[in-house]
Length: 216
Image 1 (cartoon, rainbow, N blue to C red):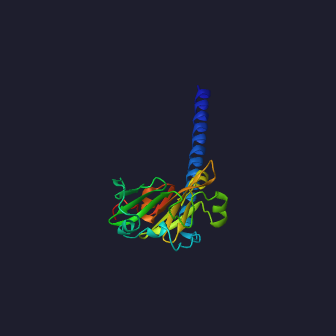
Image 2: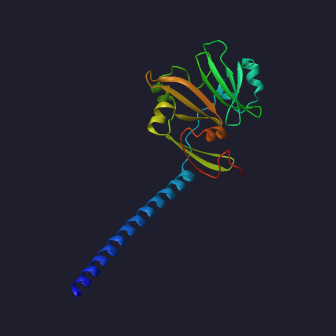
């Protein structure tokens, strides 16, 4: 009987010992994850922003933030206007069949422009521009840090994002440059302001503060 008691005691002690090792391991992993999150948060604040692309002297990029009436002055009335789920209205221009443009208009201001076609001025980019030339002319970053309305944001682009739709800062706006993976050339460009870019969240997003659709 005493041997049975001894055996049970040893078994319980072994189980308790193994369980304590398990808890220690879980706590250690938790501490590592916490440390990584803290370091990531610190880096988001410390990272220096990359050099912006010089604002072009002409082209669609200059329309971001301008009154929607400038669209009408330059391109006439749109073919149609469609609602969106982001609080803006899409103005669609596809009159001549050789160029296509859609403008996001919110509260009378242009917050985004997506365009394709050689007849549209997408300076500093060009439709058909080789991706090798794009890398030569511009500093391509996989991490974009910026601030909006007193909050800090970071977009992290995956390898696929970098190959298909890199993000570049052009003055006060941003440009998503879409790449034709078969041709290896620029197929279209979207110019967009910071608030709308955050609302779309086209890349992995980390932030401190709030999102545009959240109340203060």
